[in-house]
Image (cartoon, rainbow, N blue to C red):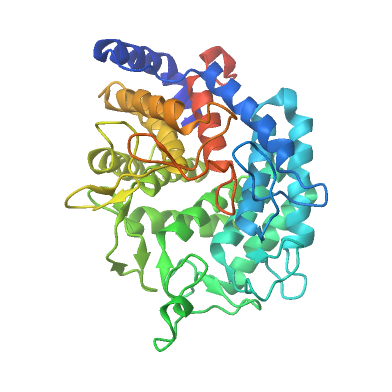
Length: 444
């Protein structure tokens, strides 16, 4: 039984429990599938065509009122995320398939023609706004960006069947395999020079700023963040690329994330040495809940959807985030805190954390509603916080950050190099599917 099928089978009972829990507590109700679909459709109408640059790719600086501002750069991560979302929405909403496949192909063309490094292979991490290498921005590459290129192109291939998408996805994977895979300790080196040479150490005499890679981490170390997104990308790639090496690397990424990066009682080691020794750091509650979902998704792709170990680890990550990172007073997940001591210390509410929290809580409620109403109650509270504070009541879309109590932080801009629409759209699509009436699922 797949994860999607099991979600479907548990939907009606879970909805009944959710409603009953909300009534008993006289608290907020969980979102409905129709409401999520309406919000998502309205948001997609804002992002596309607002972000679509007729000259190629997607605009990265969009104001609160959706006014496009001049770009300062073009990022592989942002361009890939916008491409993935367009393809995913084309799949989610069949009535708009052709419209959004056009946007997805527009993004794919930019990845292939502009973000691809025609001279050295692989894909640029960042370019100038004109699509050219900018010495001021540097030319180092990073596996995090390559992972998102795989993720986007594989999704376009899955939805549209385009040969170009398969080529882009495979080229990005093959570059990782040839240039960044660690043959000794497993996993992937994170930073490379433009020619693909892995950067495996830093100069201790250099200024601190010069010791860091594109994610702000000392050269030569491995991170949770890169490896969970490699896992995410390989999960998508394995659905459309049956080469044995792809499945082998998916298993490798899966076991690294589940068995090395995730640790009891339910947290993630953010930074690790090359041979996987953890380096002390905070607990990122958003990554905890996101990784819980990604492990379940990868297990399904690997054909072990009911694996008890995977579910135990995934659930522990989400439970721990609820224990240590959940805001009992205002609702929602806090940004960060201690993994094993005092709990939260950064109470910022970040858009992607709330979106991933919504998705993870819906997943847990579908599977474990018969054991506890904890996830149903948190799901309803999470949605109340999102709808009340994270959604822009005037212009639509999601704010990037709020204070603990929901007051807007910053100017409410809709897009920047890191803030695209993939976290929020993915969460709304997954949760809407989970909450849809069983009759809408042909596999029931």
